Each structure stands twice: as C-alpha cells, then as structure tokens.
Image (cartoon, rainbow, N blue to C red):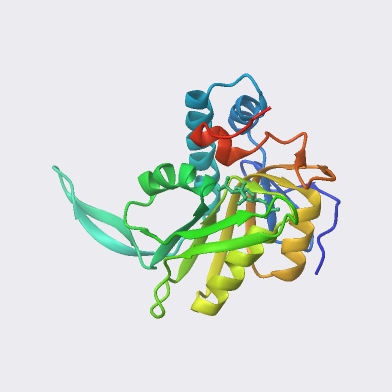
Length: 232
Ligand code: PRP
C-alpha cells in the first residue's frame, strides 16, 4: 500500500502531527523539532551540538511515538496519600541500527528506562546503496511486544526494511520506526512493503539524489555524530 503524497493535519488537540492518509507515517510538526532539525542540517554545526540536537530530537520524537504505549494501573503511595499510578504492561525493545542509531538510544532510554536494547549492525554499501548486515544481537526466542527501530536517517529505506524483516522473523508483534529525517521515496517504499509499521519522522525531504543521499538532508548522520569521515 503506497502512501499518498497528500498531507493533512491530524485533528487532535495539539495538531502536532501530519498523517499521510492511508498510511501509518507520522511527520511530527513542532517548532522545537524544526528548530533542532535546523541545527542538524547546518553544515557548520559542531559535532558536540550535532549530538546534542540528535538527543533533543530523539526525545521529542519518542514522546510522540510512545503515545499509545499500553500501561496497567498501579497504586502508589505519595508522602501524603495513596493514589493511582501506571506501569508499563509491555516489553519494549529499542533497536538502534548501528552506527548512527546509537545516538538516539540514551535519550529514549531516559524516557523508557525499563526498555531492552537490541543492536543491529547495518551499513549501506557505497557502490550499491544496499544495506550490508554485520551484527545482530537479537536472541532466537522471546521477542519483545513492541520494538522501536532507531535510526536518524531513512534514505532508500533499505536499512530500515532489513531491520523490519529481521524483527518480523524474530516474531515481534508491533514495530515502529523513529527517524529524524527521511526521503519521500524511502518512506513510500517502507510503508508499501511494511504497511503495518508506524513510521515517525521529524521531516520528509523531497529528493534522493543519484548517490542516494537525502536532499537537502543533513549529510551523513553517523559521520557527524562520531566525527569521522569526509563530511563535506
Ligand atoms: C546510514 C543511516 C541509515 C542508512 C540509511 O547509515 O544511518 O542506517 O544509512 O540509508 P538507507 O535508507 O538508504 O538504507 P550508514 O550506512 O551511513 O552507516 P553508519 O550509521 O554506520 O554511518
């Protein structure tokens, strides 16, 4: 099921998300997201500020992506009285795609301290732009109830789809993808191949160039987070 390119604002109280009709793609629209995304895009942004901006955006995106987390009621004793509280009733797994996804783990763990973290190593072959799998830490059994794939970039969508296939084989019932930036082409491909997967992004850019880089984009997130490579 390909997503439509038409965009409408969700009629919610906060009106913070845009949903593509017929798909499960959420482009989260918020002034703070636009602000910190501008820092990421800026080629003069230092490594330190780049990392900090990734953390801030990951927090904002995770807040949105976890709105439908399933919780159970508990009781809690305050210094003054006993009252209702909640606890998570699902096993949640964060699945960062190495390397760049590592930059999103800690801020999401701050919000979800009980989450499990399962690493997947994928890099994009420079010649073919196809994902190459080099590390997989998933155990054979007992998958989490909800997995959230973390990767700052979704370009062709190949890496995200390789991760989604792995999680499907592991038996995860529900999977979400959280990416800071995506291409329209990649989003359409992932949502066509995995229509049941919710995808949360800060912004969808229009162009995937001949080298399969997102334009205008932000360059290579992994290199900018870890201060490696030619970032020109
Ligand atoms: C980048 C990015 C995604 C992938 C996106 O990783 O972090 O994982 O490319 O491209 P795709 O949607 O076309 O698959 P990269 O291969 O640069 O590896 P790195 O994170 O180790 O730098």
